[in-house]
Structure formats: C-alpha cells, structure tokens
Length: 466
Ligand code: FAD
Ligand code: NAD
Image (cartoon, rainbow, N blue to C red; front, side, top):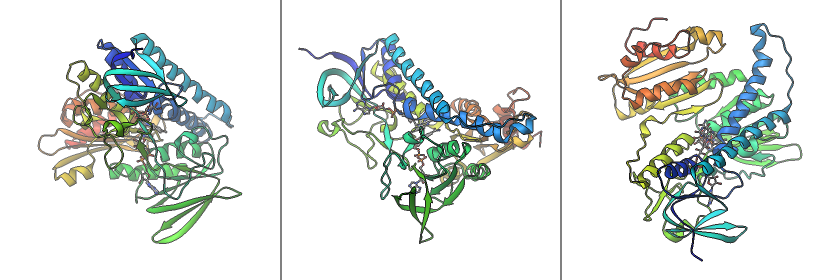
C-alpha cells in the first residue's frame, strides 16, 4: 500500500501548527496535521491562554463584585459557585478547539490523531496506542510540538497537592493557602485567579523582582499592585524541596543562606516551560536540540535536516501563541515559494493580571546595556478621565525612543486594558513611528488610549494633562 502523500505534514496543532496548516492549504498545498491529543488547538486553546483568560475574567468579576461594586453604589454580596465557573471555562475551550477542527475542514487540512514520529526526514508515522496507524510521506515536515511544564529539582509534582499550570486551571476547591513557585507570567496570572477567589497566596521567586526581564519600573509597579490584592512575596529565595504531609505540603527554601519552611495546602510550580520533543524520534534523523532542548533553526525556520522545519515554543524566542502563529504563517509562505518573514522586534507580550501588563520592544535596561541614547515619555492612568470612570487608575504608560531620531524603541503599559492598548504601540513600532507621530495622532476622548498620546507628548517635553 502506498503512503498518503502531502506537500506539507505539520506535527502539532497548537497556534503554530494549526495556523501553519491553514495558511499552507490556503496557498494551494496539500496538508496534513498530526495531533497526539484528542482535541486540536495545543497548549494555548486546551490548557493555556484560553482557559487561563476565562478564569482570570470570572475571578476578576467575583473580586470586583465583592470589593469594588460598593464604590459604584451597587450593594451585593457575591458567593462563589466554583463548578459553574470551571464549567464555563471548559465550554469556551471546547467551542474553540472544535472551531479549529471546523477550520481544518473548511480549508481541506487532513487531521490525523496520534503521535507523530519520524521514520525518515520525509516520512512521518502516526502512532496510536503504540502501533503505527499510518505512515505519511511529505514534501516538507513542520515540527510544531510546543512545550511542556518545566520541572523543579527536589519538587515532585503529584498533580494533586503539587502541580503545574494545567491542574491550576481546574482545582476542585479554593485552596486555603496556595504557594506559587515562580513570580513569572503563569505564577502571577494563576496566583491572581486563586487569590481573587479567596485563597491566601504566597509567591516564592528566585530573582529579586517579580516578572524578571520586564522593564524595572513596570515590575516595581506590578509588585505594588499584587500586594494590594493580598499576594505575599518572598523574593530572592531558592526553593529546595516540597514534601506532602498529612495536612498539606511543606516547602523548603533558602533565604540569604538560611533554610526556611512554609506550610500550605497546595503548591503551583511555575518556573518556566521546556521545548517538547518527546516521542518525535528526532535524533534518529539528526534533529539537534540546543542547550535548552529547543530545536535549532536558521532564519528561514529550517532545521539541520533537509525538508524539516520547526516553529513555535519548540524553537528559540518568546513562548507566546502569537509568535508561534506568525512563524506558522511565515513558514507556510516560504514552503509555497513566497517570502515569509517575522519581525521579532515587534512582538507584544501581555500579562492578563489586574492591572494588565503589556510591552513591546526594548526595556530601559536593555537600551542602557546596549549603550543607546534614549528619551523617556511617561503618563499615569491616574490623570486619565476614562481610567477614573473605570476605577482603573493604577499604572502608567512608558515610552522609550531614540534620543536622536525619536523612533519608538520600546513601549510598556501597566494599567487597565493594557493588552488592548499595546496594539497601537505595536503597530507604531512595525511602521517605524516616532513618538512625535503618536503625539500628533488624534486619540478619542475619553479613552484610555489618551494615556499613550500623553506619554508621547511627555517624550517631547509637552505633556498637557499633568
Ligand atoms: P503548543 O500550543 O504547545 O502545541 C503543540 C501541540 O503539539 C500540542 O497539541 C501537543 O499535543 C502536540 N504534540 C507534541 N508532540 C507531538 C507529537 N510527537 N505528535 C503529535 N502531536 C504532538 N501565550 C500567549 O501568547 N498568551 C497567553 O495568554 C498565554 N497564556 C498561557 C497560559 C498558560 C497556563 C500556559 C501554559 C501557556 C500560555 N501561553 C500564552 C503560551 C502559549 O500557550 C504557547 O506559547 C503556545 O501554545 C505555543 O504554541 P505551539 O503551537 O508552539 O505549541
Ligand atoms: P516564566 O519564565 O515567565 O517565569 C518563571 C519564573 O520562575 C521566573 O521568574 C524565574 O525566575 C522563577 N524561577 C525559576 N526557578 C525558580 C526556583 N527554583 N525558585 C523560585 N523561582 C524560580 O515561566 P512561566 O510563568 O512558567 O511561563 C512559561 C511560559 O509560558 C512563559 O515563557 C510565557 O511566555 C508563557 N506564558 C505566557 C502567558 C501570557 O502571554 N500571558 C501566560 C502564561 C504563560
């Protein structure tokens, strides 16, 4: 029997893989996508971006109803129906994963459910229950196998008391005391969810700041806001281990050289993610991982093996769904003989806490280190009418521009709807705009986006409203 043959076989149906498959099919290529899990959409749709945002939204409403509605003259006493909250999240996930299946059908992408395993560079087996169910021949293979939760030495995740982000999306009850290891994106998004629902949350972080790598002003402001929510931080501490006891978990860590312990009832391990290449049999065809296990690629997403490409979390760069999508489109266009390209200087990043945190481009620390002369424009949400009307005055916009040319080099927003506001600033960066361009653009009143305009005016020494 001859193998089914496709121009492109994509392994993995996350935002990198499914977008690549659809774009390649749109460009006239015959495409198959192999997914090992029962539903399409990868980490992002099933256990990442979407369910976490659903819970962030629900928990924020619950929190505001309890703490903020009275400021608006609305008197309610909310009580929590956790099963309904979790079911709403699951429903959204299932609608969206079925949506990807529908898009595959519409675009003529053939789906294979099973583990994708290289037989040779141009042949991929689909393995179901340990048996080869099909062998696909491919003109090109795109590896989009994503990432998995990173483990922490000394801390064994049992999935119940000590767990990663997936279980944190479906806890059966609100923990009395949740310890979060890692003050990065997952730690603070999921820590916020459970804190808003009533958990005491303590965050243990190895570095001396929250969101290490963010612009330092943003990270300081974020920590202040999280403290207001009630999160406790132990920064600059190294977790050594965690032991499940009869009553919960004891976490051991060192602080300034001294060993300390903290008791809690559950522990979320959120110390990063690692590239996922398990089961792929990549080594057999010569696929190389770098020192962090990520597949090495060149500027055109080509691995060292002819005909094999890789995109998304399994390769270098930020582990973000939209970065994976951009790479998926670019590689599909390259495979169709077009010029696919990703501008890595203009990839926004959003943290969906309250306040939201969003950035694009360079931080002030990166500009200093690179010896670039820069100007700073800042404006607080406190001085913005819409933010006041929304009770969303915590935070500011900070713009960094080239001191000589005024070109926007970096933009950082902490405040209400920061994730939406960063769109304008990303477009500005993509177009090579200056802060003068932003300052001269009419922004509707009263909107949060006026804070961006004022920050741009500030960069030019002519702020109006402060
Ligand atoms: P993935 O989405 O991980 O998809 C890889 C797919 O490949 C999976 O379905 C996997 O089952 C499949 N696979 C793996 N190996 C094989 C194989 N051998 N054969 C067949 N199939 C295989 N990013 C954002 O941009 N915004 C957010 O708000 C956000 N929130 C997040 C929240 C959480 C809790 C987590 C964990 C992540 C979040 N991320 C977010 C990150 C985002 O989910 C990832 O960057 C994104 O999913 C990466 O896409 P990908 O296509 O590279 O890989
Ligand atoms: P992260 O890299 O954002 O944060 C991990 C944190 O753990 C860091 O602050 C690190 O210093 C700390 N850490 C590492 N080892 C430690 C130790 N032994 N003790 C204490 N702290 C330790 O990783 P994450 O939060 O797990 O998220 C993983 C990836 O998922 C990120 O790269 C992110 O891009 C992606 N993600 C994105 C979003 C979003 O875009 N909104 C949301 C969730 C996840």
